[in-house]
Length: 521
Image (cartoon, rainbow, N blue to C red):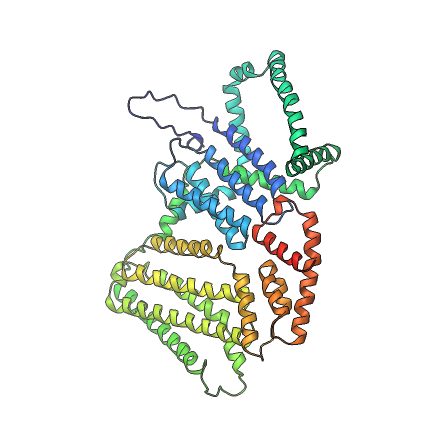
């Protein structure tokens, strides 16, 4: 554990190198920061939905990680870029929070934790930092015992110095002489300015009311709150813990990404690989040919099989087949180069990749037909985006095979592609897109009905579409359903507005709520 507790120091030429800090001295900063962040989490995010409170907590957490960073000095460009991405995603949570937004914030926070709090003697990729941070998070319950050991050891080493720093009565008296006159002078100005500025006065009044209510309503926390505080304190200790890259993880990843040794019988290994690739290519060719023949054509399907069943049947199995195919290809090309270097094997692999991409395209066509027959949903839109990500993964797999890249490169490239997708989606209001698409389809085709209940489930993003639907060229029943849904939403939002405070603030929802209430009051 000694390597985990060391504190890195940097010096410039010509400067004397300061003596190293005691091994446990950094734990005090981590514990103080963790305590402050736990209190912030208790106030900002407990029993609160994503919004301004969550955004502020993530910013405070990033600040705490930076304050407790292992190495001093000016932030580098990559660190500034990481901080900028964190800040942008936090602001987006205030504007319009989403699952992708939360995933991006959590991922960036973990990468920042490993980047600033780990021993930086060797450079590691962002993917490796993410894995190391997840390892730290999983080990966080064990850190309490280690933290107590470090506190005891550092306390014993500094006991005489700590005793001399404890303020005596004279110091407390001097502090009161500073604070009391200042407070006595500031308070009248607060009262006068509060009376002259209604907004400032309301803010001061609310602040004092909350403070007094807190004093008069002191009660033991509920078991759920105690559990939340315990979990947050433990997780924060794990995130703020200083560590070095795991050597055991190095060995595991090294073995996982290491190419298999040369086989004893090259003839068997080569022809076994060729037979596998030929067999799966034939199967995929038959499946793709059937899809291309029947989907979207006027050909009659076999007896006892409806077109709807053919389109919807087995979509999940086809997606699983493509993902397993990518794993199998990755494993096949972990064999020794003497087995997989032939043009025939690489050509068959490239053909299988092309057929997998065609399979994904056919799955997308099935989903498109289903959307055309029924309606678009957020889940189906995300499925289409996932299929696009799978196609990108196969393209990267082709580069790995034809460009002789390593398995580690392939894993890092796929993680980067997934992160780019989530980071992009967080700025796209997919719910509004789905609502507007479904309304557009209902207006274009009189045979398409608008699912008003589903639009209500989409939340604030669908409110403008519901207003438009209540006055659009739809059936009378659909217009009445949209109007009733809006009336119900208005009642709910009026109640929510009275119960919410600044921690629940979401800019886009607040604007849509104002417009909605203004039209119905």
